[in-house]
Amino acid sequence: MKPETRAIHAGYDIDPATGALAQPIHLSTTFERDMDGEYSRGYQYIRNGNPNRLELETRLADLEGGHACAMFASGSTAMLSLFQGLKTGDHIIAPSDMYFGIQVILNDIMKPWGLDTTFVDMADNEAIKAAIQENTRLIITETPSNPMMKLTDVKTVGEIAKNAGLMFVVDNTIGTSIFQSPFELGADIVVHSTTKFISGHSDVLGGALITKEESDFFNHIYRIQEIGGAVPDPHSCWLTLRGIMTMPVRVRAMHENSFMVATYLEQHPQIEKVLHPALESHPQHDLFKKQMRGATGLFSFQVKGDAQNAINFTNHLRIIKRVTSFGGVRSKIEHRASIEEGTSTPQNLLRFSVGLEHPDDLIEDIEQALNKVK
Ligand SMILES: *Cc1c(COP(=O)(O)O)cnc(C)c1O
Image (cartoon, rainbow, N blue to C red; front, top):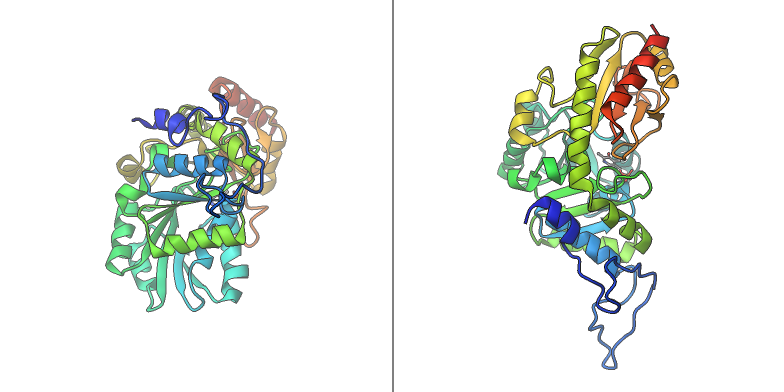
């Protein structure tokens, strides 16, 4: 079956108890034990499992082409659980332009805990190889990266990891399973912040770890999930599932919209640079064509002038909202440098998450705001 169909049907069936088409939200924290002490209906206690979470995990594993999925309360705690699955004294390799919050987790939480990280440019294969140590266990990458929209050659880095006997993890939050298939290119584990494109309406937090194959490592991840309990509640799972049903259609429309807006910005005299992988001007456009089937709605651009000028531009926008995060149906814009402490992100760069408004209206909004900062 095709992704549009699987996004609606994988792990789903009519509710057997009532015949309801929409799944009920199962709020119960605990489930009845059989007379012989077993749990033949499959559920025992909410931390271990719940029907809404199981449907969500089944759906996500299916869409990604993986074996199984463990769902977490946020993308950040999914990552934290991945790192907790390693041992103190281990070492990992991560991208130097990694999602800022995960860099903070690695530097401020995992480093004192005993996990060492080397941050490298994931476009530099020699630098990746040179960073491998005796105690290296895992390479993680994020592609496209944000906010610089740099791509990792997933196949090549996957080969480097395999040759060195390392696990290879790809954060597919921005690429999405619709436009990018990391498991086919050598990834062992895929991470998603489902808060973004997957849930799609900026109203529910969540994160997922998906494994390509059954492994001792992933069984340990399940223990961390079930014993630690950093799991999403049933209502969050239900909302995320409702979002997934339209995810394939949404990200395709966002790709179209963002490409039109990016093309408009690129020719505008007040714009210094546009970073969008689907534009021919993107330095890794060839890799984009080889590795991705689309670019969703996230990209960055630099407004000529300083940080204040870029911020002033955002202050004049009407439809496009000044908020953090990305992936929802409402367009969002953010001045990244002012929230990334000690960052190398250009001061005049804005990260833009194009939503599902009509691109003509978005372009008109941008036009009038640029006129005000001329
Ligand atoms: C948002 C995001 C995260 C963190 O996820 P939360 O759900 O906000 O905790 C991790 N990686 C990437 C690429 C993200 O965009």
